[in-house]
Amino acid sequence: MLKTFLKPGWVLSLIFIVAFSYLSFTVLAPWQLNKDAQIVERNHLIEEAYDADPQPVTEVFSADGSLHKEWERAELTGHYLSEDEVLLRLRPVESAPGFQSLVPFETESGETFLVNRGWMPTDEGNSVPHIDPAPQGEVTIVAMARYDERKHTSAPIEEQGYTQVYSINTEQIAELVDVPLAHDYLQLSPEQPGELHALPVPKLDRGNHLSYGYQWIAFGVMAPLGFAYFVWSEIRERRRARDEDALIAEATAAATGAGTGSPDAAADTDATGSDHEEPAGEHSDATTPSALPSTPAAATQPSRRSRSRYGSAKPDFYEKIRERGQERY
Image 1 (cartoon, one colour):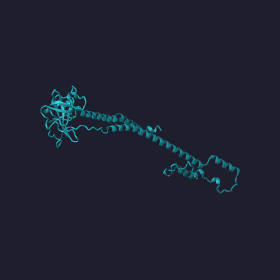
Image 2 (cartoon, rainbow, N blue to C red):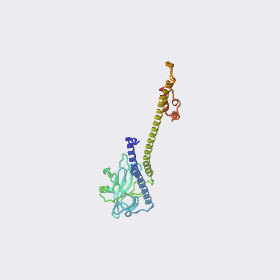
Image 3 (cartoon, one colour):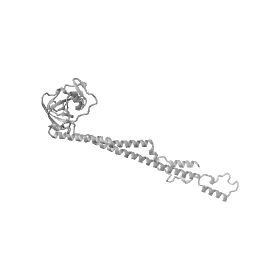
Image 4 (tube, rainbow, N blue to C red):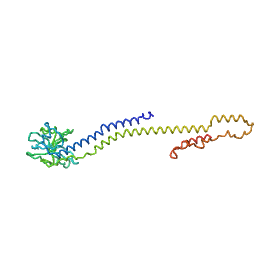
């Protein structure tokens, strides 16, 4: 039985099941569960931000320009540096490609933050649409604090009179416009000075990541259970086949022994012939009863064991055995 499960098919199946379960528990399920946890945390921060009043920008950002908490609302007074505007190129918003206006904003205290003013849909051919410049002079704005993005692999380009980038990376943009910027940036809230089309706030919906994580855990459990079931089924079927082969061999041996006769019966016949010798020539042409083959009762009347075990739905092996026994006579 052990040799059966050492065949390449069973060994490769076991390796695949072990690898799949390992990945389900260590990679796939944690990936979905972590995404769910991040969404829950994000939703909590957004709810807190809208429940609280805007805070001074110095309380939202640390001294090095990094955030304490994302999505907090900050209030700051200063002026836009409109001549240093940069466009975020072809970033989809509401299922439509668009350009987002990124403009440095210098506060009264001398700190400069990058402000995302919102987005504008592309013109025909994905060209840059008309974008109203940021207002001149001193203004007070309210914006949501956002984490900096990673630098995109594609290099910035100069096209249609604008410097265009593929990600909101303040370090890269600071080098392009030659203006020192805080590490993280601000996303302008609706109805604020300089707003284009305000970027939508993420929906407070957890999605299906939690259920996906539980599904991967279930798959990791069911895979080895399914493999164990197939192993058990294989063992059960092999035992059943072995038992059936033993019954067939037993029935074959019984039918063969009944057809040839036993040695004791042959000895009794010889003894009877020696005690009652017939005269020479008498019954010479007749066939004696002892010379005629007799059909054993076991061969003509099937015992309970030799009956078909499956009825008409399966082949009757015992019927074939009885036929072979009768052919000898």
